Image 1 (cartoon, rainbow, N blue to C red):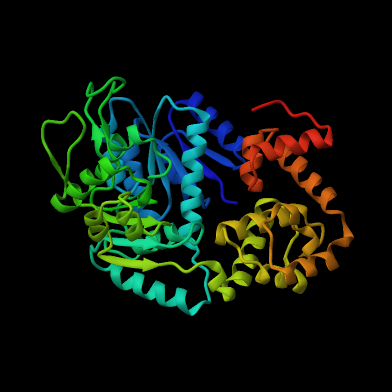
Image 2: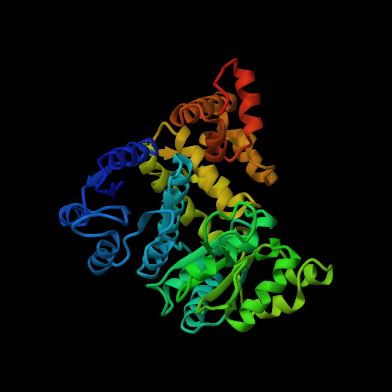
Length: 439
Protein backbone atom coordinates (compact mmCIF):
# COMPACT_ATOMS: atom_id res chain seq x y z
CA UNK A 1 0.00 0.00 0.00
CA UNK A 2 1.29 3.48 -0.85
CA UNK A 3 2.27 5.67 2.14
CA UNK A 4 0.58 8.89 3.27
CA UNK A 5 2.62 12.09 3.03
CA UNK A 6 2.41 14.44 6.04
CA UNK A 7 3.53 18.04 5.44
CA UNK A 8 3.84 20.28 8.51
CA UNK A 9 6.52 22.65 9.79
CA UNK A 10 5.74 21.78 13.43
CA UNK A 11 7.89 18.78 14.37
CA UNK A 12 5.61 17.74 17.23
CA UNK A 13 2.55 17.79 14.97
CA UNK A 14 4.45 15.85 12.28
CA UNK A 15 5.42 13.15 14.76
CA UNK A 16 1.92 12.97 16.23
CA UNK A 17 0.33 12.65 12.80
CA UNK A 18 2.85 10.02 11.73
CA UNK A 19 2.18 7.96 14.85
CA UNK A 20 -1.59 8.28 14.41
CA UNK A 21 -1.41 7.22 10.75
CA UNK A 22 0.70 4.20 11.65
CA UNK A 23 -1.82 3.25 14.33
CA UNK A 24 -4.43 3.21 11.58
CA UNK A 25 -2.35 0.69 9.65
CA UNK A 26 -0.82 2.98 7.01
CA UNK A 27 2.78 3.92 6.34
CA UNK A 28 3.67 7.60 6.70
CA UNK A 29 6.35 9.87 5.25
CA UNK A 30 6.91 13.34 6.71
CA UNK A 31 8.03 16.63 5.14
CA UNK A 32 8.92 19.91 6.87
CA UNK A 33 7.28 22.24 4.35
CA UNK A 34 5.65 22.37 0.95
CA UNK A 35 8.88 22.37 -1.02
CA UNK A 36 10.18 19.41 0.96
CA UNK A 37 6.89 17.66 0.24
CA UNK A 38 7.21 18.27 -3.51
CA UNK A 39 10.75 16.89 -3.43
CA UNK A 40 9.55 13.71 -1.75
CA UNK A 41 6.71 13.39 -4.25
CA UNK A 42 9.26 13.33 -7.06
CA UNK A 43 10.65 10.03 -5.81
CA UNK A 44 7.71 8.32 -4.08
CA UNK A 45 4.07 7.70 -5.12
CA UNK A 46 1.68 8.51 -2.25
CA UNK A 47 -1.85 7.36 -1.48
CA UNK A 48 -2.83 10.80 -0.14
CA UNK A 49 -1.40 13.96 1.43
CA UNK A 50 -2.14 15.62 4.77
CA UNK A 51 -0.87 19.19 4.89
CA UNK A 52 -0.98 22.12 7.26
CA UNK A 53 -2.12 25.41 5.75
CA UNK A 54 0.21 27.81 7.55
CA UNK A 55 3.86 27.03 6.79
CA UNK A 56 7.03 28.99 5.92
CA UNK A 57 8.67 28.91 2.47
CA UNK A 58 5.54 27.52 0.82
CA UNK A 59 2.12 27.69 2.47
CA UNK A 60 -0.43 24.92 2.25
CA UNK A 61 -2.55 26.56 -0.45
CA UNK A 62 0.41 27.13 -2.75
CA UNK A 63 1.54 23.57 -2.09
CA UNK A 64 -1.96 22.28 -2.89
CA UNK A 65 -2.04 24.16 -6.21
CA UNK A 66 1.33 22.69 -7.17
CA UNK A 67 0.21 19.18 -6.20
CA UNK A 68 -2.89 19.61 -8.37
CA UNK A 69 -0.68 20.74 -11.28
CA UNK A 70 1.62 17.73 -10.94
CA UNK A 71 -0.79 14.97 -9.82
CA UNK A 72 -4.34 16.04 -10.59
CA UNK A 73 -6.24 13.31 -8.74
CA UNK A 74 -4.15 12.82 -5.59
CA UNK A 75 -6.36 13.30 -2.48
CA UNK A 76 -5.29 16.12 -0.13
CA UNK A 77 -6.57 16.65 3.43
CA UNK A 78 -5.78 20.15 4.69
CA UNK A 79 -5.40 21.06 8.36
CA UNK A 80 -6.26 24.56 9.51
CA UNK A 81 -6.91 26.39 12.77
CA UNK A 82 -10.12 27.95 14.07
CA UNK A 83 -10.66 31.43 12.73
CA UNK A 84 -9.21 30.52 9.32
CA UNK A 85 -12.19 28.71 7.87
CA UNK A 86 -11.94 30.88 4.75
CA UNK A 87 -8.57 29.24 4.03
CA UNK A 88 -10.22 25.83 4.19
CA UNK A 89 -12.94 26.95 1.80
CA UNK A 90 -10.38 28.30 -0.64
CA UNK A 91 -8.49 25.01 -0.39
CA UNK A 92 -11.67 23.08 -1.18
CA UNK A 93 -12.20 25.26 -4.24
CA UNK A 94 -8.66 24.40 -5.35
CA UNK A 95 -9.46 20.71 -5.17
CA UNK A 96 -8.70 19.63 -1.58
CA UNK A 97 -10.59 16.47 -0.66
CA UNK A 98 -11.55 17.68 2.82
CA UNK A 99 -10.32 19.78 5.74
CA UNK A 100 -9.76 19.26 9.46
CA UNK A 101 -9.95 21.99 12.09
CA UNK A 102 -7.44 22.18 14.95
CA UNK A 103 -7.61 20.87 17.59
CA UNK A 104 -8.83 17.47 16.46
CA UNK A 105 -9.04 14.00 17.97
CA UNK A 106 -7.57 10.75 16.73
CA UNK A 107 -11.12 9.56 15.92
CA UNK A 108 -11.79 12.61 13.74
CA UNK A 109 -8.51 12.10 11.88
CA UNK A 110 -9.37 8.43 11.45
CA UNK A 111 -12.81 9.29 10.08
CA UNK A 112 -11.40 11.77 7.55
CA UNK A 113 -8.68 9.39 6.32
CA UNK A 114 -11.09 6.46 6.11
CA UNK A 115 -13.63 8.55 4.19
CA UNK A 116 -11.02 9.70 1.68
CA UNK A 117 -9.59 6.19 1.22
CA UNK A 118 -13.08 4.73 0.69
CA UNK A 119 -13.89 7.47 -1.83
CA UNK A 120 -10.66 6.69 -3.69
CA UNK A 121 -11.58 3.02 -3.90
CA UNK A 122 -15.06 3.95 -5.10
CA UNK A 123 -13.72 6.30 -7.75
CA UNK A 124 -11.37 3.64 -9.12
CA UNK A 125 -13.77 0.75 -9.38
CA UNK A 126 -17.17 0.18 -10.91
CA UNK A 127 -17.06 -3.54 -11.62
CA UNK A 128 -19.82 -4.97 -13.77
CA UNK A 129 -20.55 -7.30 -16.64
CA UNK A 130 -24.31 -6.95 -16.36
CA UNK A 131 -26.13 -5.41 -19.37
CA UNK A 132 -28.44 -3.36 -17.12
CA UNK A 133 -25.47 -1.87 -15.29
CA UNK A 134 -23.54 -1.21 -18.49
CA UNK A 135 -26.57 0.66 -19.85
CA UNK A 136 -26.92 2.54 -16.56
CA UNK A 137 -23.31 3.75 -16.79
CA UNK A 138 -23.87 4.90 -20.37
CA UNK A 139 -26.90 6.93 -19.30
CA UNK A 140 -25.04 8.31 -16.27
CA UNK A 141 -22.20 9.43 -18.53
CA UNK A 142 -24.65 11.20 -20.84
CA UNK A 143 -26.51 12.98 -18.03
CA UNK A 144 -23.22 13.98 -16.39
CA UNK A 145 -22.51 16.43 -19.20
CA UNK A 146 -25.16 18.87 -18.00
CA UNK A 147 -26.18 20.24 -14.61
CA UNK A 148 -29.38 18.21 -14.30
CA UNK A 149 -30.39 17.16 -10.78
CA UNK A 150 -30.21 13.37 -10.56
CA UNK A 151 -32.03 11.02 -8.15
CA UNK A 152 -30.30 7.65 -7.82
CA UNK A 153 -32.51 5.04 -6.19
CA UNK A 154 -32.25 1.37 -5.27
CA UNK A 155 -31.81 -0.98 -2.34
CA UNK A 156 -29.17 -0.41 0.34
CA UNK A 157 -25.73 -1.67 -0.62
CA UNK A 158 -26.20 -1.60 -4.39
CA UNK A 159 -23.59 1.11 -5.05
CA UNK A 160 -25.70 4.26 -5.37
CA UNK A 161 -22.95 6.53 -4.04
CA UNK A 162 -20.55 4.90 -6.49
CA UNK A 163 -22.82 5.94 -9.35
CA UNK A 164 -23.08 9.47 -7.94
CA UNK A 165 -19.30 9.78 -7.84
CA UNK A 166 -19.18 8.46 -11.39
CA UNK A 167 -21.59 11.18 -12.54
CA UNK A 168 -19.40 13.84 -10.89
CA UNK A 169 -16.23 12.34 -12.34
CA UNK A 170 -17.69 12.47 -15.86
CA UNK A 171 -18.96 16.04 -15.50
CA UNK A 172 -17.41 19.43 -16.27
CA UNK A 173 -17.21 19.96 -12.49
CA UNK A 174 -14.88 16.99 -11.94
CA UNK A 175 -11.96 19.19 -10.84
CA UNK A 176 -14.14 20.90 -8.21
CA UNK A 177 -15.31 19.57 -4.82
CA UNK A 178 -17.52 16.54 -4.41
CA UNK A 179 -19.20 16.75 -0.99
CA UNK A 180 -21.29 13.81 0.29
CA UNK A 181 -23.79 14.34 3.11
CA UNK A 182 -25.34 11.31 4.82
CA UNK A 183 -28.80 12.57 5.72
CA UNK A 184 -29.47 9.47 7.84
CA UNK A 185 -26.42 10.03 10.05
CA UNK A 186 -26.96 13.68 11.05
CA UNK A 187 -29.29 14.50 13.98
CA UNK A 188 -32.34 16.52 12.90
CA UNK A 189 -31.38 19.51 15.07
CA UNK A 190 -27.94 19.75 13.41
CA UNK A 191 -28.83 19.10 9.79
CA UNK A 192 -29.73 22.68 8.83
CA UNK A 193 -26.40 23.97 10.13
CA UNK A 194 -24.59 21.08 8.43
CA UNK A 195 -26.16 21.87 5.05
CA UNK A 196 -26.42 25.66 5.09
CA UNK A 197 -23.99 26.78 7.84
CA UNK A 198 -24.45 29.31 10.62
CA UNK A 199 -23.09 32.64 11.85
CA UNK A 200 -21.19 33.04 15.10
CA UNK A 201 -23.56 33.45 18.03
CA UNK A 202 -26.64 32.41 16.07
CA UNK A 203 -27.52 29.79 18.69
CA UNK A 204 -26.13 28.34 21.90
CA UNK A 205 -22.83 26.64 21.11
CA UNK A 206 -22.23 28.53 17.85
CA UNK A 207 -18.85 29.90 18.95
CA UNK A 208 -17.56 30.30 15.39
CA UNK A 209 -18.93 30.84 11.93
CA UNK A 210 -19.53 27.56 10.10
CA UNK A 211 -19.85 27.13 6.36
CA UNK A 212 -22.37 24.53 5.29
CA UNK A 213 -21.85 21.72 2.81
CA UNK A 214 -23.60 23.62 0.02
CA UNK A 215 -21.04 26.43 0.24
CA UNK A 216 -18.14 23.98 0.47
CA UNK A 217 -19.43 22.30 -2.68
CA UNK A 218 -19.79 25.58 -4.57
CA UNK A 219 -18.85 25.13 -8.25
CA UNK A 220 -18.77 21.39 -7.61
CA UNK A 221 -21.28 18.70 -6.66
CA UNK A 222 -23.15 17.89 -3.46
CA UNK A 223 -24.56 14.41 -2.84
CA UNK A 224 -27.54 14.19 -0.49
CA UNK A 225 -27.23 10.55 0.49
CA UNK A 226 -30.43 8.84 1.71
CA UNK A 227 -32.50 11.97 1.10
CA UNK A 228 -35.62 10.12 2.26
CA UNK A 229 -34.38 10.45 5.85
CA UNK A 230 -34.46 14.26 5.76
CA UNK A 231 -37.02 15.77 8.21
CA UNK A 232 -40.06 17.45 6.65
CA UNK A 233 -39.23 20.89 8.05
CA UNK A 234 -35.89 20.95 6.30
CA UNK A 235 -37.31 19.61 3.05
CA UNK A 236 -39.10 22.93 2.49
CA UNK A 237 -35.83 24.85 2.91
CA UNK A 238 -34.02 22.48 0.57
CA UNK A 239 -36.75 22.96 -2.04
CA UNK A 240 -36.21 26.72 -1.88
CA UNK A 241 -32.45 26.27 -2.29
CA UNK A 242 -32.98 24.15 -5.39
CA UNK A 243 -35.41 26.70 -6.85
CA UNK A 244 -33.57 29.92 -6.00
CA UNK A 245 -29.95 28.67 -6.11
CA UNK A 246 -29.15 30.50 -2.89
CA UNK A 247 -28.85 29.61 0.79
CA UNK A 248 -29.47 31.26 4.15
CA UNK A 249 -26.98 30.61 6.92
CA UNK A 250 -28.61 30.29 10.34
CA UNK A 251 -28.41 33.75 11.87
CA UNK A 252 -27.34 35.31 8.58
CA UNK A 253 -28.62 38.66 7.33
CA UNK A 254 -28.27 38.04 3.59
CA UNK A 255 -28.79 35.17 1.19
CA UNK A 256 -25.71 33.65 -0.44
CA UNK A 257 -25.82 32.59 -4.12
CA UNK A 258 -24.46 29.13 -4.87
CA UNK A 259 -23.48 27.25 -8.01
CA UNK A 260 -23.73 23.64 -6.83
CA UNK A 261 -24.97 20.62 -8.70
CA UNK A 262 -27.25 18.39 -6.62
CA UNK A 263 -27.31 14.60 -6.71
CA UNK A 264 -29.44 12.56 -4.32
CA UNK A 265 -29.76 8.89 -3.40
CA UNK A 266 -32.49 6.94 -1.63
CA UNK A 267 -33.40 3.37 -0.76
CA UNK A 268 -37.04 4.37 -0.22
CA UNK A 269 -39.96 4.64 -2.63
CA UNK A 270 -40.35 8.42 -2.39
CA UNK A 271 -43.67 8.42 -4.24
CA UNK A 272 -45.13 6.14 -1.56
CA UNK A 273 -43.44 8.24 1.13
CA UNK A 274 -45.05 11.37 -0.35
CA UNK A 275 -48.48 9.68 -0.41
CA UNK A 276 -48.00 8.76 3.26
CA UNK A 277 -47.10 12.36 4.13
CA UNK A 278 -43.45 11.60 4.92
CA UNK A 279 -41.87 13.34 1.93
CA UNK A 280 -42.78 16.47 0.00
CA UNK A 281 -44.13 15.62 -3.43
CA UNK A 282 -42.86 18.90 -4.91
CA UNK A 283 -39.36 18.17 -3.60
CA UNK A 284 -39.49 14.67 -5.11
CA UNK A 285 -40.23 16.06 -8.57
CA UNK A 286 -37.55 18.72 -8.16
CA UNK A 287 -34.96 16.05 -7.28
CA UNK A 288 -35.98 13.43 -9.83
CA UNK A 289 -35.44 15.53 -12.94
CA UNK A 290 -33.42 12.52 -14.08
CA UNK A 291 -33.97 9.30 -12.09
CA UNK A 292 -31.47 6.41 -12.22
CA UNK A 293 -32.33 2.99 -10.81
CA UNK A 294 -29.49 0.76 -9.58
CA UNK A 295 -30.61 -2.90 -9.76
CA UNK A 296 -30.02 -5.22 -6.78
CA UNK A 297 -27.19 -7.74 -6.88
CA UNK A 298 -29.60 -10.71 -7.18
CA UNK A 299 -30.61 -9.32 -10.60
CA UNK A 300 -26.95 -9.09 -11.63
CA UNK A 301 -25.61 -12.67 -11.33
CA UNK A 302 -22.80 -11.88 -13.77
CA UNK A 303 -21.38 -9.40 -11.26
CA UNK A 304 -21.17 -11.75 -8.26
CA UNK A 305 -18.09 -13.61 -9.51
CA UNK A 306 -16.43 -10.39 -10.72
CA UNK A 307 -17.01 -8.62 -7.41
CA UNK A 308 -16.02 -11.66 -5.35
CA UNK A 309 -12.70 -11.97 -7.21
CA UNK A 310 -12.07 -8.24 -6.74
CA UNK A 311 -12.79 -8.41 -3.00
CA UNK A 312 -10.55 -11.48 -2.60
CA UNK A 313 -7.64 -9.58 -4.16
CA UNK A 314 -8.42 -6.44 -2.18
CA UNK A 315 -8.58 -8.09 1.24
CA UNK A 316 -5.74 -10.48 0.50
CA UNK A 317 -3.51 -7.43 0.00
CA UNK A 318 -4.89 -5.51 2.97
CA UNK A 319 -4.66 -8.48 5.34
CA UNK A 320 -1.36 -9.83 3.99
CA UNK A 321 -2.96 -13.16 3.09
CA UNK A 322 -2.18 -15.53 0.21
CA UNK A 323 -5.74 -15.95 -1.08
CA UNK A 324 -5.81 -15.83 -4.89
CA UNK A 325 -9.40 -16.74 -5.72
CA UNK A 326 -12.35 -19.05 -5.00
CA UNK A 327 -13.01 -22.73 -5.56
CA UNK A 328 -15.81 -23.62 -7.96
CA UNK A 329 -17.90 -24.83 -5.04
CA UNK A 330 -17.39 -21.55 -3.13
CA UNK A 331 -18.28 -19.49 -6.19
CA UNK A 332 -21.40 -21.60 -6.76
CA UNK A 333 -22.35 -20.97 -3.12
CA UNK A 334 -22.02 -17.19 -3.60
CA UNK A 335 -24.02 -17.16 -6.83
CA UNK A 336 -26.88 -19.15 -5.23
CA UNK A 337 -27.28 -16.67 -2.38
CA UNK A 338 -29.85 -13.87 -2.53
CA UNK A 339 -27.57 -11.18 -0.98
CA UNK A 340 -30.36 -9.07 0.48
CA UNK A 341 -27.66 -6.68 1.68
CA UNK A 342 -26.33 -6.54 -1.89
CA UNK A 343 -22.69 -5.65 -2.61
CA UNK A 344 -22.03 -4.51 0.95
CA UNK A 345 -23.09 -7.89 2.32
CA UNK A 346 -21.03 -9.76 -0.28
CA UNK A 347 -17.99 -7.65 0.55
CA UNK A 348 -18.32 -8.40 4.28
CA UNK A 349 -18.70 -12.12 3.60
CA UNK A 350 -15.58 -12.25 1.41
CA UNK A 351 -13.67 -10.14 3.95
CA UNK A 352 -14.42 -12.70 6.64
CA UNK A 353 -13.53 -15.60 4.33
CA UNK A 354 -10.15 -14.08 3.45
CA UNK A 355 -9.40 -13.63 7.14
CA UNK A 356 -10.18 -17.31 7.74
CA UNK A 357 -8.52 -18.71 4.64
CA UNK A 358 -5.49 -20.95 4.98
CA UNK A 359 -5.08 -21.89 1.33
CA UNK A 360 -4.63 -19.94 -1.92
CA UNK A 361 -8.21 -20.80 -2.98
CA UNK A 362 -11.07 -19.88 -0.66
CA UNK A 363 -13.51 -22.73 -0.07
CA UNK A 364 -17.04 -22.79 1.31
CA UNK A 365 -15.68 -23.77 4.71
CA UNK A 366 -13.95 -20.39 4.94
CA UNK A 367 -17.24 -18.50 5.15
CA UNK A 368 -18.83 -17.71 8.53
CA UNK A 369 -22.00 -19.48 7.52
CA UNK A 370 -23.90 -19.13 10.78
CA UNK A 371 -23.47 -15.35 10.62
CA UNK A 372 -24.99 -15.18 7.13
CA UNK A 373 -28.76 -14.86 6.64
CA UNK A 374 -30.75 -17.94 5.68
CA UNK A 375 -29.88 -18.85 2.10
CA UNK A 376 -31.54 -20.85 -0.63
CA UNK A 377 -31.90 -24.55 0.21
CA UNK A 378 -29.60 -25.64 -2.60
CA UNK A 379 -26.84 -23.41 -1.24
CA UNK A 380 -27.29 -24.84 2.26
CA UNK A 381 -26.99 -28.38 0.88
CA UNK A 382 -23.73 -27.43 -0.81
CA UNK A 383 -22.47 -25.97 2.46
CA UNK A 384 -23.36 -29.07 4.47
CA UNK A 385 -21.45 -31.24 2.00
CA UNK A 386 -18.32 -29.15 1.97
CA UNK A 387 -17.96 -27.57 5.40
CA UNK A 388 -16.51 -30.62 7.13
CA UNK A 389 -12.85 -29.70 6.83
CA UNK A 390 -13.01 -27.35 9.81
CA UNK A 391 -15.78 -26.81 12.32
CA UNK A 392 -17.81 -23.64 11.80
CA UNK A 393 -17.52 -22.76 15.48
CA UNK A 394 -13.75 -23.11 15.36
CA UNK A 395 -13.56 -20.88 12.28
CA UNK A 396 -15.82 -18.32 13.89
CA UNK A 397 -13.76 -18.28 17.09
CA UNK A 398 -10.48 -17.87 15.19
CA UNK A 399 -11.88 -15.01 13.13
CA UNK A 400 -13.33 -13.05 16.04
CA UNK A 401 -10.22 -13.38 18.23
CA UNK A 402 -7.87 -12.55 15.35
CA UNK A 403 -9.91 -9.47 14.43
CA UNK A 404 -9.94 -8.25 18.03
CA UNK A 405 -6.16 -8.65 18.20
CA UNK A 406 -5.78 -6.64 14.99
CA UNK A 407 -7.80 -3.73 16.45
CA UNK A 408 -6.22 -3.85 19.92
CA UNK A 409 -9.37 -5.27 21.50
CA UNK A 410 -11.74 -2.56 20.27
CA UNK A 411 -15.08 -4.39 20.09
CA UNK A 412 -16.79 -1.62 18.14
CA UNK A 413 -14.18 -1.71 15.36
CA UNK A 414 -14.14 -5.50 15.34
CA UNK A 415 -17.93 -5.62 15.01
CA UNK A 416 -17.81 -3.17 12.10
CA UNK A 417 -15.14 -5.23 10.31
CA UNK A 418 -17.02 -8.48 10.82
CA UNK A 419 -20.44 -7.04 9.98
CA UNK A 420 -22.03 -8.12 13.27
CA UNK A 421 -23.27 -6.27 16.35
CA UNK A 422 -21.12 -5.37 19.36
CA UNK A 423 -23.51 -7.46 21.46
CA UNK A 424 -22.69 -10.49 19.28
CA UNK A 425 -18.97 -9.93 19.90
CA UNK A 426 -19.51 -9.71 23.67
CA UNK A 427 -21.72 -12.81 23.72
CA UNK A 428 -19.17 -14.80 21.74
CA UNK A 429 -16.34 -13.74 24.07
CA UNK A 430 -18.40 -14.88 27.05
CA UNK A 431 -18.92 -18.19 25.27
CA UNK A 432 -15.17 -18.55 24.67
CA UNK A 433 -14.27 -17.47 28.20
CA UNK A 434 -12.13 -14.65 26.81
CA UNK A 435 -11.93 -11.17 28.32
CA UNK A 436 -11.13 -8.00 26.39
CA UNK A 437 -11.38 -4.59 28.15
CA UNK A 438 -14.49 -2.59 27.27
CA UNK A 439 -14.05 0.12 24.59
